Amino acid sequence: PYLGLTMHWIKKNGSGHLSLESALITFHHILGCHNGQNLANIILRLLDCVGITTNVS
Image 1: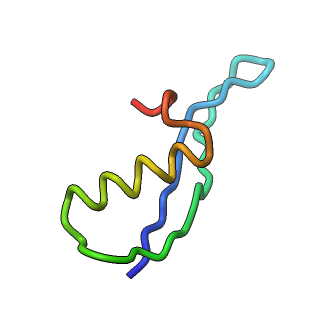
Image 2: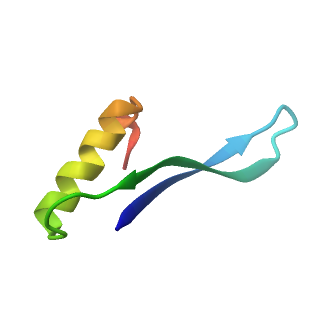
């Protein structure tokens, strides 16, 4: 099984127009149990790897 993480944000251009932006953060092969605790640990580790853990809300 694999886990894909995407991010979405609102970007304002120079004229004040807002647009919804999206990007794929990672596509990761999951090893081990697929319970909530394991998935949470995997997601936090992946967010740490790309340096956006403190930006997630």
